Length: 299
Image (cartoon, rainbow, N blue to C red; front, side, top):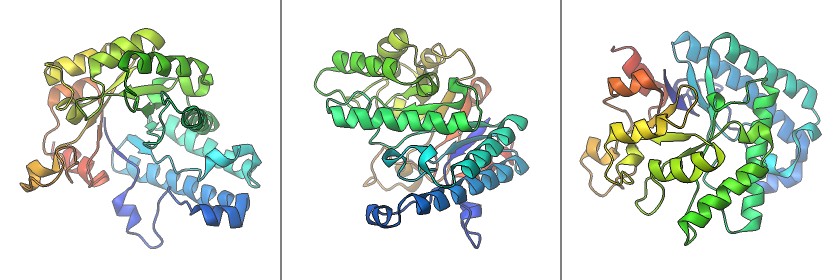
């Protein structure tokens, strides 16, 4: 399967726009409180179902939902929301649609989610964020496996790579099962961070978390391994069909060498057949659903 992340550009251009990332500034949160959070969360979940229905109509069965689905969820428990019962019903409706249509629905918490941080406060907030994502998936009644993944990065080395990986695994062990059983970890796009093999050895072998192979990131952390070798190592960490992230460098498409080599292009020109045959591929392209349709309609 090919998939895309978060925004559906086609639906976002409708009036009113269909989107599931409504949020607010902190001052608004403080002023309007959980009643307003409830309203936005319900709108987000309703629109998530609309996006999934659009995806199915267009033959797309792999989708990464935004982590803004329930805004400011670090500041409250979901059960505290005034419209919790209705929200739970709507999330269950999403989950039923996902199961009935064979959709792979995943999440990728934001960059601040750093479970291995040396800051106890950051680590605590990160653990709560992951637990919240697991709670959303539980409310959808989706299986507690990496098939419905919660994808993270280790985040940094903090001056000691081995100690950081060990700390990451210790904190995975402390997570509630609703998060830990769905957790996956991704290789990085910085030579000084983590390659696929380092994550397989230091994370999968130690605490059982599978490795998501990011094809574009592998360019920066290949450690001498080819793309096929990098994917093969990541694939070994999965007990089910793996997830792969695929993007291409914007500078290769535009010829603008001032653009960071890590920046994603609007489209992906090539999806290797061998990769598509062996994994579910998330296209991390700025064209979003249009990047997927470009490939599904031209095959």
